[in-house]
Image (cartoon, rainbow, N blue to C red):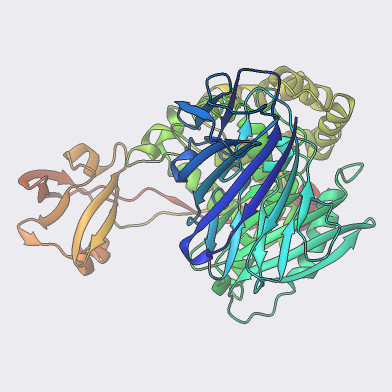
Length: 571
């Protein structure tokens, strides 16, 4: 079915986008259309249909057609029971979408720009393959439109694009406005850069560094699988994140932080992360993730591959690109390891469990999330680091696994990989013992001896044993008042019965305010008992807690043999 979309933004200050879908009527009495409920790469039911304000269906003669909503985000046109005065040869679906949420998974339109994320504004035809053409119309003051869609405009002032199917159509976000743009060539292919938003002055060469990342990542594969690529970045206050697409990525970052070295290295890792997804996820993918069911959850136990492998490789690419030092790389690993050690939920959820439950755990965090689960990004990346080190002992490395994964994709690009296929590849590269160890780390919650792995590559863990207390609380403040945001499992506060959402009022009868809590570790003595008073849903609650000594923390990963460490990581 050939489908033409017309997307119009006439009054951007209202945040409304008008869309008209036009198509020939199929030889059917009824036809369903839908708005996706989620976005590939972001595993949460976002129910994009909630942003539709008005919707109507008309015949080729302009007559209104009968249609009903049959489910959330699904409507059914009834051609047979519509009061048609002539032969209906085509139909139009017209609707308005509210777009005012600036994330990489949603659409945002205001006076300054439009960022249009496919699943959040483009409806599809249910149970039909479509060949879409899409045209954009927007205020004349906006001078640029960038997208990964194929430009088929016959006139310069027209913005008309095509895609081979609905999947590719909604996989190409669109940026419209007066943003900055630039680009470079790698292997003869165009790479476009666009920047929306503001940043403080800095001395980094973003264009050169992104080009270096592209060269480094692509060198790990036999070919670059796109004709051109688009990096679209939004620099806005307190933003961070990204979402991968087949030939583009949307990135968010706080532009004020580009001059901070540690933040900038993290930004480069984010760029590498989303760009590596070009191969891993958008092409090498779990069997369950395609063809997509856009209305229901798409479950997989292989997010340790989609995001775990990517989370290991992203920071490694920055090191291999020589955009950070070994010391900076190990500082990032120190933070990753300490974050992992701080999560009690790692004792309850395996990597595979975490993956399968992404829809209700990782993307819907609550006050108890850290006590009940673990991120497949974080633990997955750490587990792949141990696989890499295990392969190094066999004279191999993670590159050998990437080669097999990419060959598997090229041999059968229409079909995703299975768990057994990936494990067989690991066994082919490293042997059965390496496979068994890796598989155990996917399916169990057993502790992992990361320290020994780093010792074997010429590094040493340096631990810090604080002499202060740790109550096991995270707090949020309203003025000077302190409210418990979460309680760490088995901490002194957990054992004392303090609850998330309690307001902590007093310790040993003395009022506690924000500035006191900031100094609490200096006030309390490990091993001593203290009474506390909380307000719980308006009721005063008292109890006793024993202030426990803070556990040791990973202070740094010290380099003992730099040549050995670099050899283990860079080759």
